[in-house]
Image (cartoon, rainbow, N blue to C red):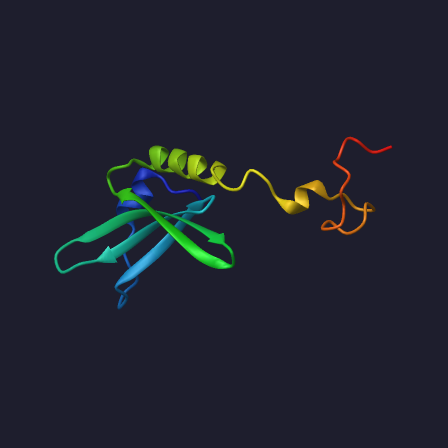
Length: 107
């Protein structure tokens, strides 16, 4: 379920836990940490890169707002690799690593 302002303001770490992560979607998470006097909320973009987890911190609530954090995630996600080796492969065309014929130029 996507986050909204009301749900975001009511989120707290589970009893006995120091922090909690809640997913909004598309790799956007809110990290909630309990301090001595207050609760901090930090936006994170989580993704897999080369088999390991990469986390980018986007800011601490209330800045950026939810909509701005979602926009930042979309921009970061589109900055990924523009080329994927498997995007050139089609079923029945053989091994992707051995295919030298560009798609669209088949005879």
